[in-house]
Image (cartoon, rainbow, N blue to C red; front, top):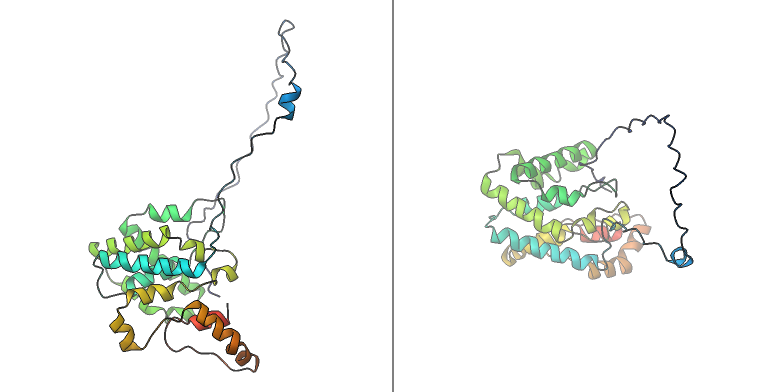
Length: 252
C-alpha cells in the first residue's frame, strides 16, 4: 500500500507555562448584594451543545460513482482550458494529490491550503510530493515516471493555469473524500485514476490501444468468481494494460 504523505503538518513547541499570580483576591464589599441563585427552570434547561467539527474526509456512500464524477469533471476542465493532448499532466496531478492526506484531523484544512496557492506554488508542491514519494517508494517512481516527468521541465504560465484548474476541480469534487482516509482499506475502496484516464482519452485512442476501463461491479464479480481461487493456489494475477482495476479488487 502506497504510503501517503503529509506536507502541511505543523511542528509547534509546547507553550511556556504561565507563572501563577500571588496577589490575593480582593474581598467583596459587605454592602454588595450576593448573586441570585439560579432557578429550577434554569438548572433544568439543557445546555447548548458545542458545534462539532465536520469530519475530514467526508464519508462517501458510493465511491465508484464519485470517482467517475471526478474523472468526468477533470476531463471537461482540462479540455475547456485547452490543456492539449498530454493527458499525463492532469492524470499526474490527480495521482499526486492522491498521495497526501492530513495527519491531524483538527489541524489546518489541507484542501483549503492547496486551493489558496497560486500556480507556481502548486507546481512546486507537486514536485515536492513526487520527491517525497521517491524517498518513500523508490521502487515505484520509475513506473510512475510518465506522471511526473513533465515537472522536470519549466512549466509555462498557460499550462500552469490548466494544472491549477484540474487540481481545483478534483479537490472540490471530493478527491480527498476517497483518497485521504487514514485507513488503507477505505483509501482503496475505489480506483480514481481509471475513470480519469478513461474520460481524458478519446474513443479512437482507447480503441487503438485496446485499453478499456473495467467497471468496478464487473471487476468485483470477476474477482468473486475466479480470481480469489486462482490466488489460493499460488498463481499470480497480472493486468498488463490499464490502471489495474482488477488488481485493486483482488488486493484491496
